[in-house]
Length: 424
Image (cartoon, rainbow, N blue to C red; front, side):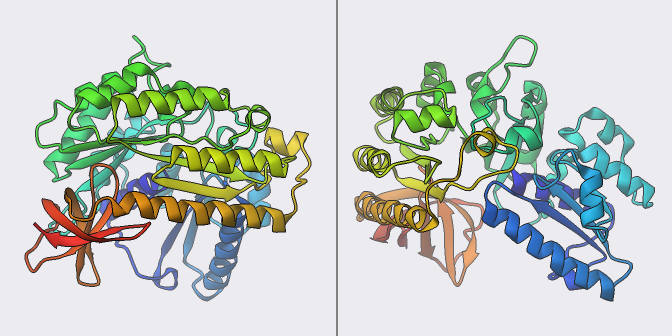
């Protein structure tokens, strides 16, 4: 979501006459898009704000804008803490950004502004739509979250769920395809909630069926899912639609029911297992990824072991693991003491990472000798790279220009993180 929002802001500035520079030191305008999902992320934000303060002393005409989840409802407090920042605007609040731009004399398209905060930077968001553009694009379809998981800051910073009209999303996708995009990823803090606030209550499956009708669009992805909201209708849509990638992100967060209850996740471990069984029964070829938090307040060694055992049992293709980090204002921050020592959190995180490297290595080794289809996204150090439908990163060498093409690659070598091969 942050990447999509950054692209939209950059796109608008490009259309208004700005161009990107390599370093903030060279910039007249810096827009810092922030994440504070963990303490380490917030630390990076504070560090960058310190660097920008020094740069502004040298370059007094520099404008600094800050957006993203660092910007809460206490904007006046932020202004006092960081007087060198010219403007703060909440994530997705493009109309506020455009109002600031207008005040500064930057050209503003009033009609685009009036449509909605989502469409202010719609399909023209691909800011480099030339030959070397990525064939992949992001489309936010729902903003905010109604779940209020006890560890999560997102609902407090991005607000309640607001869906984009289905026809509007389809229109944007069609325009992106006209610009050369072949793969779109639909984005939402909880993408499975899409449409509940719209007239007629269309859902994510309905949107997938409509998008699959777009000629020239090769692939459709979506994230992030919430396990309690993944419907059988959605699973059947993924099964039946060739363009929808057979890859699902299903964040489990913990393998212990008491921890899941304290996290306010809304499902049990057995209900999660049932969902995985349903997916694998209908989509045996699907790749699955998950998110895990270790060291949630009060997590015992026995409770962590249940999470570890669940990961060994399900054997995910990808596991994103993080140590619990208290976020000011969340339910967990108000209700629980951060009781698990840092060294214990680090050791549990290390164990999960070690396990997943082994599991992913074994899964990926099964691709040796097989042929996969890759959508080529670019070239890095002399090798083309892209992803399979199941989201496997693939590298291969070829003298021809493969950028943006769907190519067959014969896999010769694998690791837990990527596949390597030759153009078949």
